[in-house]
Image (cartoon, rainbow, N blue to C red; front, side, top):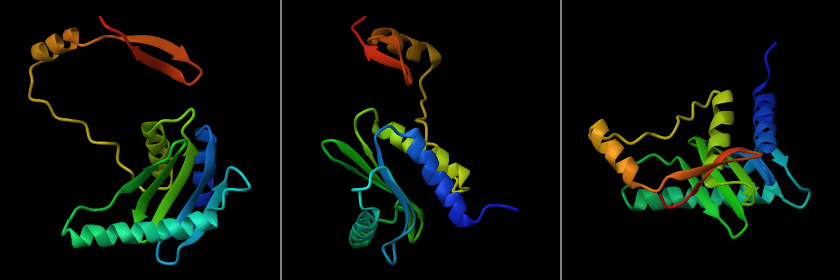
Length: 168
């Protein structure tokens, strides 16, 4: 017998919590009511019900702004960066979003987005990878440009390979 949708949400939130250092909390939120359908707190003093309610209002406000500007693009996600935290609101359906908050220490915006996409795919939400730029340059001109750029110095950390730029 398969998992219920609520159990799938819990598994996804647990996975996000386990994959992010400094995880503060995550919720799947009904934007219409502002109620969290599933939550995972990283600390007892991070009130995810309050975050769900206020983030729902922020999402509604942003949608009204897009409409007022006559923008026809679909809303995907909103990122709030604080001095020491990242907060991501990722729209799953018209009135359902994922909210994730994490410490900036040990994380990057791209790491946060990658972890969210991995776990959304597991939920069957099909979050597509970021589009890759298309280039019309030849391989020779790309090679020439690469040789002219500073080369990264590779270094291995506990989280994997990192690059530190140095002049060539």
